[in-house]
Length: 322
Image 1: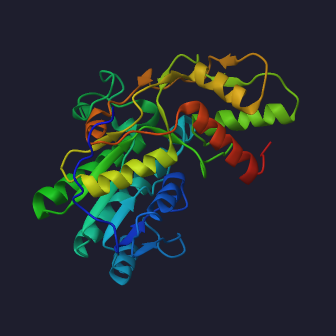
Image 2: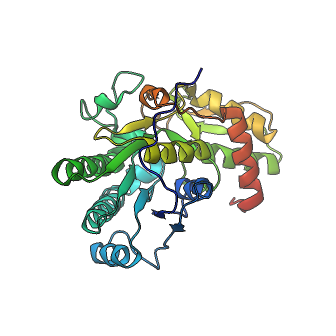
C-alpha cells in the first residue's frame, strides 16, 4: 500500500513556471507533466535566448521573464567516456549553470526553485542503498567526479540560500534516467541509450548479440523519465526543506541483465559479449527512496515497459548513426 500523500504546500496553478533545459530528456518530460497542472504559463528558453553559463545573460533573462517557480534540470551530461574525456567542460559548465540560475532566482524573488542533481554525487563505496546522509562521507567515483562536484555545489547553493535568505530552494537526486529525448550519441551516451543503439544497429545489420563495456557485473538502478518528472512536480508541491530527496525506484539490475532485456526489447537474438578492457565504473549504485515513498509518491513504469517505450520512441524519432 502506498503511503498517504503529504499535504500540498505549494500550488503551481496559475503560476509562471520556467523549465531550464527543456530540450533535454528530463526537461522535456517536465514540460509534458506540467501541462496537467493548470500552470499560468510554462516558459522555456533555448541557448539562443539565454546562455546559462553567462551570469549577465541569466540575470537579464530572469528579470525580463519573472517566473514564479523554476525547475533546473539543465546540465551538460554524458556517460563514463564523456565525463573522463571532457572534465573541464563538465565541471565548469555545470557549476556556472547552477550558480547563475540559483543566484538570479534569489535576486528576482522567485517563489520556489527545484535543482536537479544526480546519483553520482554519492561516494564510490558508500553503503547501499544510498541514503541522503551519505553525501560527502567518502571519495567520489573517479570517472565522473567532475560532474558530481558541480552537482554537489548546486545542492549546497540551494541549502545556503535557504539558510541565509530563507529562500524556498530544494534539491532532488534522481537515479539513472532513460526515455524520450535521451542522448543516443555513439560515444557520449549513457548506458541504456548506448545499449538500445547497439541492439538496433545489430538488428538492422542482421548481427547476433551485442557487446557491453566491462564485466557486466555492476548493479544500476533505472527510472523512466516520465516517472521522474512526476516525482519532481510532486516534490515542488509537497516538499520544502534543506535536505535533498532521492528519486528512485528502489530496485536494480546488473548491466548484463539490462543488456539482455534490451536485446529482448529490440527482438535481437544471440550471445552477450563483454569487453573487460573497458571500465565498469561504480560497483553498485542503488538509492534509498524511502523518504520520497513515505511522502506518498511511487513510480509507475516497470523497467521492461519503460525500455519498450524508450526503444519505440528512439526508432520513430532518431535516425540511426552507424
